[in-house]
Amino acid sequence: MSDRTGIFAGEDPFALAQAWLAEAEKTEINDPNAIALATVDAEGLPNVRMVLLKEIEAQNAPSGGAFLFYTNYGSVKAQEIEGAGPGLGKAAFVAHWKSLRRQIRVRGLVSREDGPQADSYYASRSLKSRLGAWASRQSEALPSRAALMAEVAKVTAMHGPMPARPPFWGGFRLVPLEIEFWADGAFRLHDRFRWCRTAPGAAWEVTRRNP
Ligand SMILES: Cc1cc2nc3c(=O)[nH]c(=O)nc-3n(C[C@H](O)[C@H](O)[C@H](O)COP(=O)(O)O)c2cc1C
Image (cartoon, rainbow, N blue to C red; front, top):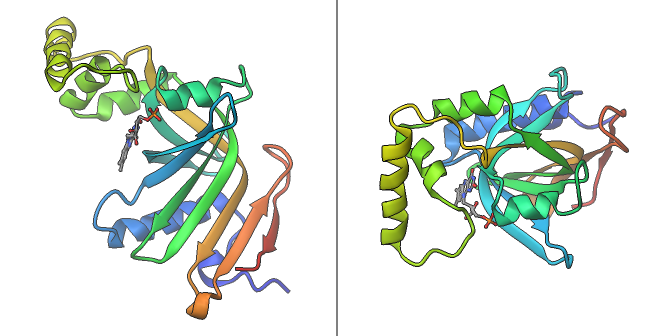
């Protein structure tokens, strides 16, 4: 019989991730949805940076379960995600909650979410953030802070109080092939359960791992 009980119990890893994030929202001092997103460049050199996880879609959602974040499609991370070619995007991320002493690691396939879902998330952001997305050529060299503020003034005049989502800004949907749930245990005898599947939609195999 499986000893996957308590905080690890359940048959939907997306629901489990949602439950862990909901707990972290009560205990983390800020940004409980911050994740370190890893990509590799064309030479295979890894890269990592924080982004905010904006949605966890459940297994019964049309996507079959996924993790969503938003960014600039011209950014380094986007180029690295999409560098392998259309339909071949891959990435990994880790969420770590110090207050809970837990982490979730995810690896999988990534595609754009640049439809109505991205439009409505963009519309939900503050006006300054919406205009900021227009003003920033994320990851490109910037000569000065003043140059950025001049760009903000320019796009504010151009797009007004109801800017449309920039075509170069939107979501990425990561559909996992692996999700690992980790919780701190006494004397470094941590609990780890790795959910693996060979393709999106295939059955999950769950194994307990050595700490
Ligand atoms: C807590 C935190 C949350 C962040 N969230 C995002 C985000 O949701 N989207 C984003 O594009 N950048 C976000 N950033 C900025 C990124 O870490 C990074 O600087 C930026 O996306 C450029 O990365 P790149 O040049 O590798 O593409 C966040 C930074 C921190 C520290």
